[in-house]
Image 1: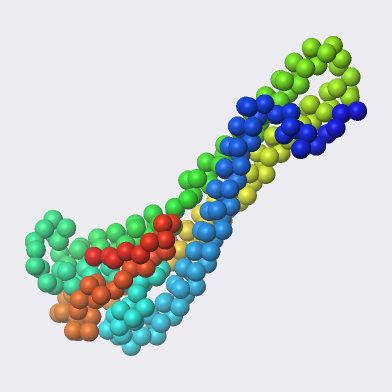
Image 2: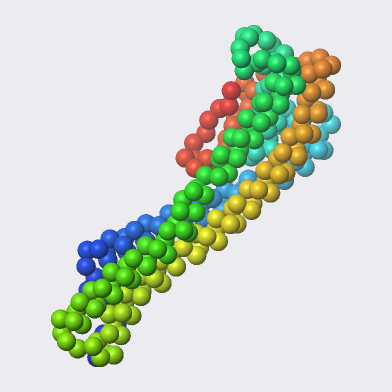
Length: 254
């Protein structure tokens, strides 16, 4: 009776089967990397967003919010949006350079600035989702190709030996089906993670768009009545944008 099992399958696998296993392994490592890193960053960002929103609505004025941004920096989407709003107000009030980006009314300029902030956050939130979707849709077919290749070799071996009994068929076919199982094992976590992150991102963007209307109302009042107080001036020059991107680097938003 033949010795069955994954170890026996590896020992008898040819170059094509080993290549398919390597592809599935890379897919699995990439999937769990994004699940763990993106999950951790999403949890941190949501916790910081709740803290910022609580402090924002409890602040007595926009000047207090500006002081908070200067002390803590921008670490999540909602403070990033407020920072872009402050930057737009200061840039439009200074009017140092007349360019196309500053064209239009003050309200139009503020609207475009807030929209750019939301678009940047959306791009950051969607990082890694393409990889997860690709793995979820392609991993089962990669495994299926390995199964077909294994069954083909099993049938060739059976034809060469002239024996087609159950003992001769069960081992090769069972080992070939391992590829299908591996493909599903890679695809299922990726599909679940993709759906979870898409749902969380959608909720964040809905809340961010709603918050943008409030920020616009507060800052548009300052644009129409006059400059903000001196405590808010040059906020954009001092606030550090510490978004945890996939690269893990810190950059300054201008």
